Length: 216
Image (cartoon, rainbow, N blue to C red; front, side, top):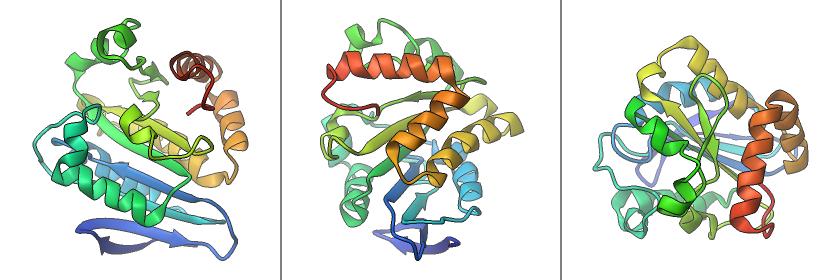
């Protein structure tokens, strides 16, 4: 099933509903600041794919050039952008959820710092290659999902976001997610494709959540 463009809660999105039953997946980019300038084109390309089972919703950019409020804070979810995001999650109730962010070159050491969990209370991101980072979502938002849901954050390097190699790297991660209907099959393909990186990401997740949740 192909995607159709519409506006929901003031947000431009693409939605596809396949005839065959399956999970609902939500992909959201550009959650704050100017991130949308770096996530929209990637997610719009993803919206050119098809969905074989279930439902998929793609939001290329939640906001445009908004005030930067970190998603690790309660303040974000009380902001206009955060409330829009919560509305979309409530509306579609996804069991697979992906956030696409963008970061500046100077932020790379901070985002991948092994001491990040001690410094700000959440694990570091893992570099999948080309500076594309993955990790779980904000613990504040993760509480709104069930223990069985799959939630991932992808960080795109702003200074390289227009490079074809970066777009393809991110799209590969997202297309694997779009293809699978079961979380274990999804994880198995991630492990095959990125064995060392996913192993590290899983270890960090288990350490943080003390095995109460499955990654991610």
